[in-house]
Image (cartoon, rainbow, N blue to C red; front, top):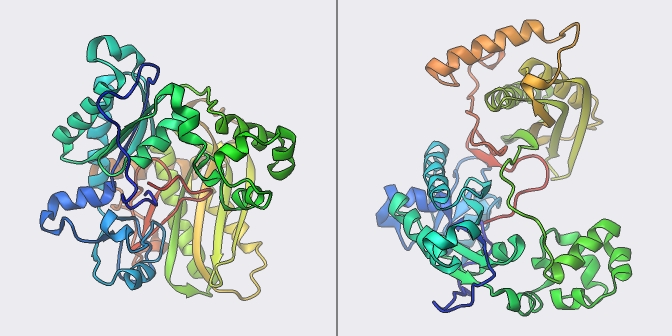
Amino acid sequence: MSRQDGASRRVSADDADDSATPILHVDMDAFFVSVELLERPELRGLPIIVGHQEGRSVVTSASYEARRYGVRAAMPVSQAMRLCPSAVVLPPHHDRYREYSDRVMEVFESVTPLVEPLSIDEAFLDVSGAVRLLGRPRTIAALVKRRVFEATSLPCSVGVASTKYVAKLASGMSKPDGLLVVPAHETLDFLHPLPVGALWGVGGRTEEQLTNRGIRTIGQLAATPLAAIQRAVGEASGRRLLELANGVDPRGIELTRREKSISHEMTFAVDVADATVVKREILNLAGLVAIRLRKGGFAGRTIAIRVRYADFSTVTRSRTLGEATNVGRRVYDEAASLFDELDRNGRLVRLIGVKVDQLVDADTAGAALWDPDEEWREAEQTIDRVASRFGDLAIAPASLLGTPRRRGLGSRGDSQAAGSPDQPLGPPDPQR
């Protein structure tokens, strides 16, 4: 979810020079909100929050009207309502979002085979091969916008540029429902006035390290010697940031994107002291992660947990196995062991998360002479067969009876937990 509220929206004239700008970044506008408004059109124009009011849910998405009050993704809904008391809170419907995402991606693939999905609601497109048939890049961008709307009734914004990074910046600046072309020869003029925090990969700490050295804009960074930047942010990061600041981004479209990890998290409605309660939730999360591993044809070697305490301090712990697994019981055993090893000092647990990474193809993971997961693997394959007929919630461990279970959502590690949608483990994805 973009931090922009549309107030500084920029769009291009029809005659903008797109002669060397084959890269499009298409981003749906306030995607979850827009999908919800298809069912509730009478709410258009009002500040909307997608989330849950009960417990300690966080904002999943917010309309541009709500953003003007300072509402942001991942903000507690209670805080968002204090900022915008008139906001309408709508519960999320992730199955519906996936359905519309599939329609959007089909539109992209009807224009060019060179599509790199970044998330459920955004993708890069290389349209260099479509120019002869469909027209220049700006024309194709307008065509994509029109086809997406015809297929879904949803608005999107498109950035057109010579590189992926600049195209992504441009789409964000054109929101909502805009189209911005950055001519190749104007790339540096476009980049250099922007704050250094707009650079891909510059988080709060890196931005502080740069601004403390008087580097506040991308242009100032571009004019700084490499050695000085590397002293501030490290050798590899310094080189990459300097290249981006000078408009250098050689990355092409990645057609075979792979999930690097799969995770689920859950925020408790009330801070928890009882380790048994926490481990019961670890069992549930491990099962959800394992289901998605098997559905995706993956297995993973590293098991990790994330624990956030009531004071908002957060710790992560991980363990790498000798063999990859997609068996929920193994994931649970390792995750529960990691939790037991924490020195909690009586602190209350606010959030718990389970992640599996170092993913490999399950079919090529290799078979050991002795499979320690064999018994559980057979049981969980039976569960998969039942779930394929009756749904993911048809069968569950006995210890979870009476506990609300959640379905696995999407393909990027997002989770929806008992009314508390949380971010995946690891660095959050760029907000839209």
